[in-house]
Structures are given as C-alpha cells and as structure tokens.
Length: 564
Image (cartoon, rainbow, N blue to C red; front, side, top):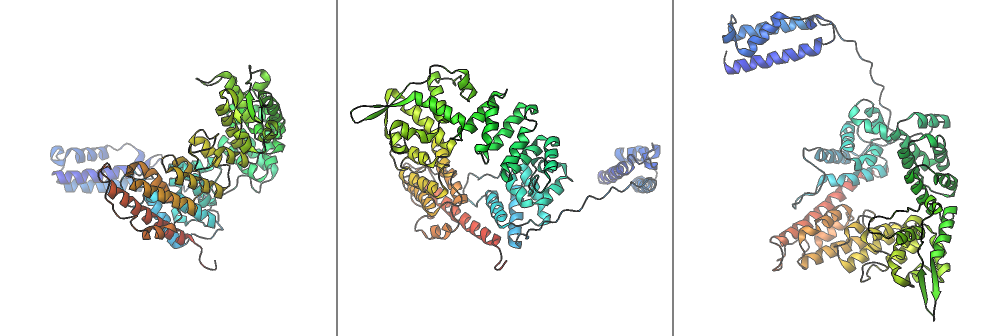
C-alpha cells in the first residue's frame, strides 16, 4: 500500500471511527459493543496492507471498511429528540438601516481578526476601524434601532471580549441578547449583568422584585439595585435595609456605592446608621456619601470641627487665614469617616485637617472667613505654609459636593502661567474639577488651556470632554498639533492626541481641514527633528481627515430615513 493510499485509508478510517463513536456512545446499540473485526481492519489501515497481508490490497480494505461502517450505523438506536428552545422574543424597535448594518458587520469583523487589540497601530495609514465601534453603537442606541438578527452572535462575542463595550452592546442587542445567552454558556455574562436592553425588575410586582433580590446571584442583585435606584430611589434603599446586616462586608460596600446615583436627604438616616458598620470600608464610604450632602448632620459636625481649625486673623486691612490642625483623632472623628493613620510620608495633623476640611460644607467658608465668594476665599493669604493643604482639601470638597462655583475658582483662568488655579495642584485635580462644570463650559476651559499651554499636559483633560468636541475645542487641538509640527515637535509623542482627535473631533471638520493650506502636505523638517518627522506629520493629518470623512459617512448611514 503506497503512502498516498495509506493516507486516504487512514483518513477514511479515522472519519468512520469518529462517526461511530459519536453515533454509538451511550445509545446501547450494536455499535457500542466490542468489535474484533473492526479493530483488525483499523490496524491494517494504520500499518499498511502490504505489512498485514490483506487479500485484495488497499481497495479491498476500503470496501470492507465501508461495508462495516454501514452495518455499525444501521444497528444504532435513534436518540430522543431534545425539546426546542422557546422562540426568541420580539424586538419592537425599528431595524437598523441596511447600509449601517453592513458597516456594523465590517466593524465587528475587524474586531474579531486574530491578533487585533482594537488599538491604534503605531504607523500611519488607514484609521483603526474598531475605534469607531463605540461611536457607532452610541448613535444607533440614540436612534433606538434594533440589530439585524444575524449580527447578534458577533455582537455578543464583541461584548465578551471587550468589557468597555458591554453596556452599549447590550442596550443595542435588546431583549434577544438574554434569550441567546440562555442557549450559549459563552455569553452567560449577559445573564449576570441583568442587562440586554431590559430594565431588571421593571414592570414586576414589588414582591417579585424582593424575591429576585433575596434569591439572585450577586451580579443579578447589583443590576437589579442599580436599575431600581434609577427608577425609584426610595424602593432601592428599602431593598438595602432589608437584610442589610446579613450581607457580606464586600457586598455591603458594593451595594452602598449604588446610592451615589440620586443621592439625597432621604438617604441620610440609612447612611448615618452605616457609620457604625463593622466594616471600616463601609463606614468610610457612608461618611463620604454623607459629606456629599451639605445639610446632613455629619456635614454639620465636620463644619464645626473645621471652623475650629481654620479661622481668619484680621490685621491692618488684611485678612490672613490661620490654621491649627487637630492634635488627635478621637473615636468620634473616626466614626465620622476620618482615617487615623496617614499614608507614608504624610504628617498626622495635616492628614486629619485635610479630611475635616474636605468633608465640611463649602458654602460655610465665605461667611466664616469674611470673603464675598469662593474666589475671594482662595485669594486670602494662609499662614505657616498651610495654603497648599487647605486648597487641596477644598478641591476634594468641590468635587464631592459638585459645587461649580468653587470648581471655577479653584481651576482659575485656563491661560494662567502656572496652568491652573490655586487649588488645582495636579492634572488629576483639574480633570476632576472640570467634571463638575457644565459640558460647554468644560470644553471652553480646556480649549483655553490648550491654546495657552499646548498639548503636553492636555491629554487627560481632553478625555473628560463631551464627544464630539465643540468647534472651539476641536480647532484649538488641531492648531496646537500644527504648531507642534512647525516647532519641530517629536511627532510620535503626539500620536495619542492625534488618535483622540480622530475619534472626538466633529466629523463636519473633515472637509475644512482637507481644504486648510499645507495641513496635509509634507513639510521640510527642522535640523534637529527626527528623520522622517515631516512625512509622519503629513500622513497623520491625512489620516485624521480620512477618519473624519469616514465618520461622517457612518453617521449619515445611521440617520433615519426622511419621514421615518
């Protein structure tokens, strides 16, 4: 038997063996019994007919195998048909327009390619398509479209691979995602998330909701609590009170964090009771939430303590803030959320002071210090080197209490030489303060910052601005990139900002940038520039324009038909 014939015989034999094993396993049929003749034929196929001396050679062996396979299959007992799954629920939303649905298939195919990470490649070229998927999903959800049924498996695979896509994918997938997840264990995260376009507990009787709360897994209970908190904050808090003492400490901490949504005065009694919880982390979270309620009893206690530590000293027409930090951290302070042990390298007294001031209501300070407004408070001199500590605590308080007036004062002018206001001691502080401001004001401040200071420190601030960027912010970023190129800036250091611009600029800017003289043309690099820098800059701007044009087409595909 030759090599080729031996391989064909072995392949057919192996296939027959697989068919028999699958068909006969557990059926109790003839194929399940030991078969010496079959074993002999398999051995002959494996070692070769010339070595086993099979009469008739390879052809006879193959004929014998074929006949034997038919005999074995004929003796199998048919399996009992499994019950069919319930039919998929009806999705009442309008279907995604055909062109947009095709675009989604292209994006998902790009995401599922082997080795694809969904990240922007290091070399210039075409835009990374997977970076457009979040925007596509956001717009499709805004229009209330339902997916084409055939794309649902790829959508759920994408959500399984990238957790950042899950909320948008599950909202778009709708009610059929949960139905599919019940048929495929790879998608069980949909069941745990309690999402898939449905609102856990919506429309159920209160007793049914309580039963789900008592009997569900942790992820299901968390999803139910989050959903209920959005619809009915009081009912969500009532679920927490029910059986609170029996919850595990880590679960209590996670559930307590849900109260950040819709936090209000009605939550104070429950949070005040949680200050005596046996878990230190739960106590600290409850104190933090209470500090976000400026009229809470805890905020009042902190205000009195902070006022005893921070006072005005009036001299000859000048007011100076004097600070006397706490000398100890007593049990009452610890009960109200003050951590007694400071981190490494931090003094105890400054650590305690910062926590007190950060938890005190901000609206008390102008009256206490004799100032007209937050800006006037921040302009006061602070004695004995306490200024930085005091302003940093006010920064944390402004974020916690969502106080826009204090956030503006702490940020200062975006073009200030020190690139921030007196309390904005770091980029992270500025980003948190900006999140307190209205969307348009936030974009204008960052645009001014970029115009005044360039892009070297702006990446974190840009990430907190609403997409698409406002016209002023988008143009400030593009102008700063062009200035960096003309100044001989190292082009690869700005690849992150360039990638952010591709995703966040208004797509309508694409045609304007394409018509801007010299923007996409290669320029002569300066003597100290990296080799190829001019070509890289030009190609990056061309890719920016190409991506904006592609996004414009994508949004047009998603637009509802006229009269729809």
